[in-house]
Amino acid sequence: MTEKNDSIRKYLSERRMCSAENLALKFGIQVSELWPQLEELSEKGIVRIAQKNCSGTCSSCSTDCIPEKIDPTAIIISLEKREAEDVD
Image (tube, rainbow, N blue to C red; front, side, top):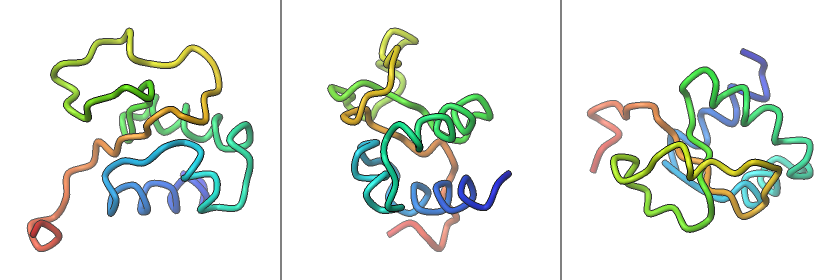
């Protein structure tokens, strides 16, 4: 995993979810530059990319929720489990 992917993974693991646009702003890059990394993380099962109307409950979702193109409003959800000490 690249250093940038690791940084994205750690940030999302703490926040659980955020928009692609906010994630790009966090790392000082354009959404179009971030998107390939998000797709790679999605393919590895580390994140889920969902449309902006995502409820955050993946059990109610299907593959139809995945945007077909680069979408700044897409919601990026961490699929990693939090450690027990990280949960309030």
